[in-house]
Length: 95
Image (cartoon, rainbow, N blue to C red; front, side, top):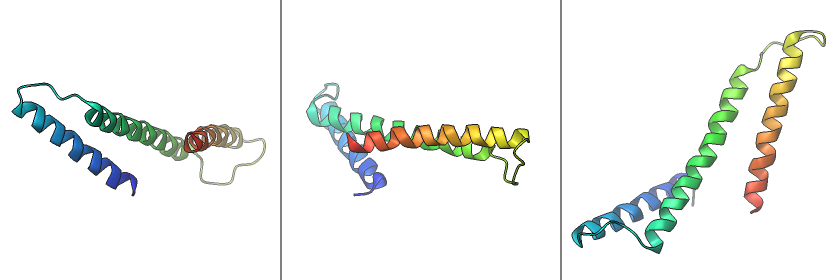
């Protein structure tokens, strides 16, 4: 199952729980509802990392900088930030 398929599945389950709760005059609740809401939140958190990574990549200088050039040091710092994001992403995959 892809991320998009999982997101679609969770959205459908949440809507079904909400419709059922409305028909009963209640607020949506229960294990299925809560689990699918949590999964959507987790998927959104990961996409935030993707957005941060994309923004950092857009800050890089494309041309090859010289060792004494500020662009070299800037790119080095940006590479370090990307490595940190990748490290935490890999750690999440193991959990």
